[in-house]
Length: 319
Image 1 (cartoon, rainbow, N blue to C red):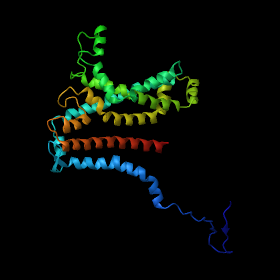
Image 2 (image 1 turned 135 degrees about the vertical axis):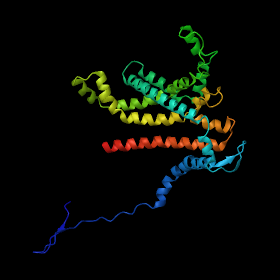
Image 3 (image 1 turned 30 degrees about the vertical axis):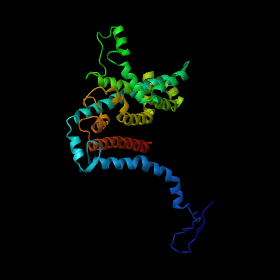
Image 4 (image 1 turned 180 degrees about the vertical axis):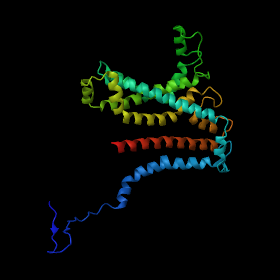
């Protein structure tokens, strides 16, 4: 509908004024209605996020007895004791190797499995169901199963390797300094690949077939198509899988603790099991130090999330 204008008087220098018709604004719902809808979500966030975070920080600033009773304020003493712990460097290096090792191998294996599951072959549905089983199973049960498979005396893995003459004597996968971390990484990859593969599979299914048809008509080889078309278009899925796997692997307590349970000290621990042992399984038995280490873990995760959000914001600007 054209808008009406009022003409100025003849000879006047005044420009015509555009008369706009304004509709009266409809009153919105009162604020308490929005609060009523958001109330359950806000209550849940307060209960499972805000309150534990406040309690964790409060515990990290307190002093506790060996039985766990609060005896007073410790200031930042718990943080200083964690930072000066003799095993902290080893724990952080173990954490970096554990997270990077599982992440890289999971991404590579997930891409390969997703490519396989995207093909049309007989029994594909059954294979897809079988792939998701390790992810759906309990981590504690999976980790306990692998302690039996990798056992030095009765493990099936040692028996198979001995029968195939790959090794001449049993390998202590869960007790040797050289083998415990690679064994944990292998189990971590095993339980992480299914979810990652399904994320990549969803990304592959969203790529239009016309793009591949155009590449084929231009004479692109299979490798060129994968590197120059598939991987760039999989970037959102790669980003999501990377961030979620970092958080998931970093916080993976059952695998590291169960496979490393028989070893004393902190020589093969990551930051999550280090935090737990400070409170319950070490000579320190210090809840305050454990809480201070927990605050450090949360800050590391927040850094990863901040980097992820920065990448997402940059992608939205480029799009």
